[in-house]
Image (cartoon, rainbow, N blue to C red; front, side, top):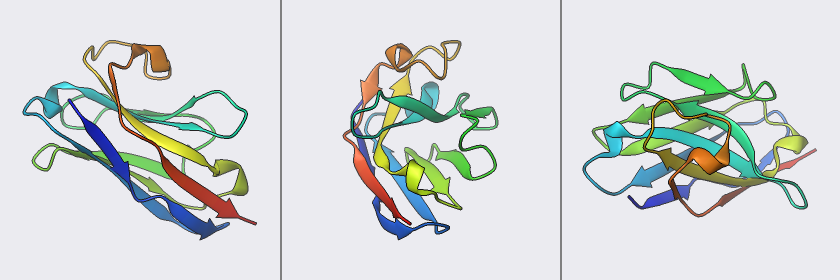
Length: 125
């Protein structure tokens, strides 16, 4: 599967952005989908995952809980990340990823099989 993330940009602290990730292929609904981010000089870190095909089972990093929401639309082969109450520390390249194994570990980037290119989110103070 090929993934393409978009929607990044520059936003002031407290603002909102919505990232989307478009996937190719007919088996999108069978993958667990995740979002990760990587700030300059830091390791890639888990943001959120939509685990099952319906997206009803999700997980999120403690740092974004209550602010970020992941959702998926299998009819459109997309997974989105709604980001509210953005903080300067949310500044990073954001990546979407797909995982074949639903039972894999959400927060481990090594568990994901396919990656999109990053989309840059910059939050100004």
